[in-house]
Image 1 (cartoon, rainbow, N blue to C red):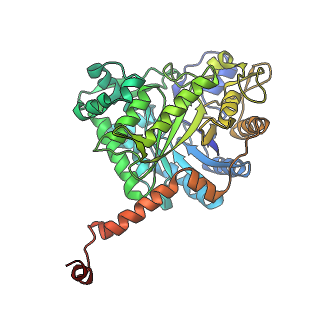
Image 2: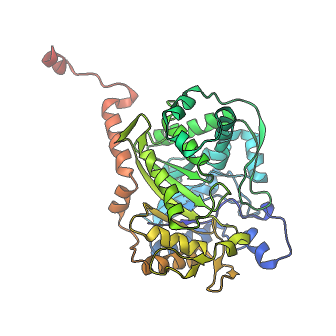
Image 3: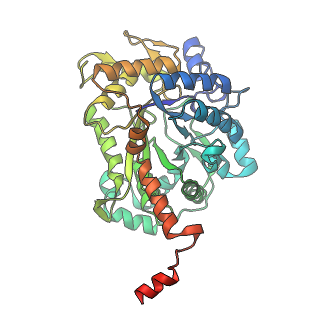
Length: 425
């Protein structure tokens, strides 16, 4: 599937300190990122015509272009896109910061950061909301202080289950600034505590379950993000993916802990780890949920030249390519395990020419770039609604909800009829 991350939360006027480099400042302040609902809806229709079937969106103030917690802005995009692009799966972002977000949280509490996850689809909500934003990793940084480094072996062991059972999030408020590649203020998430993040994350999972909508998380630090998702899957008070479905977005290049891969093997290691979350640690042979994987190239323009390197797989092996083209090539390989290839202004609000030089670009041009790489590698973009619904694990949720409804009609356990009681007596 083809996915677009249309706006993002990082590249805003308030998150970037001017350098004097006109091109770099234009990219980092998001001058080419659309904020007007009319412009975004028209662009979404154009992307839909090109085969895009997954649309990820962060609300922005139409006047200031800064990140916003306004659910009215989300609704103004969702409702028209649902009407005009019938098969488009919508996803709302939640890793939000900036002055207007901080003010919203000051007034209404930490839930304001992710309140859009409580919107029903027919009232302007989204099929997916990224429940695990960067700030939730505060839980894992506290676990690291108690249990040591969260390596892959530990995360995939019974010892991690014991840690999940024994860990109690603290209520100590601290400034939350994560080690990520970002614009000058893009990694500042204000003051919060592990306990607040635990409660907000748990409430978000419950909200999605009650609405019959779907679970999605983003990974920005590996393996710390992997540990956070495993924790949320296994914790009895959370049960992320408990309805049978989970989409995991891997943002390669977002941080030193999840760098853009140097080769296909490094890329596959992270994808394969995500797929392991289909199974609980206590029952490794029993598939409990359908996990799908979305991949994005979240590379800052300042780092673009570092990733203009020869491809190690695919039809253009040996040719130099930018991060976005390399990601598309990796996703196109038959054994990649990727379900959604994501491009867009949230991740790389620029294009790289054949010499490795930057230029301004929009979402439609980025779509053309990834489509050309997919075609070169013999990959076909999926646009069939039924195939997408099945592939994204949404039938798992539908069947789970129907079963729940039969077992608990009107929210109460089903009672046997008098006739059934006589038959079993």
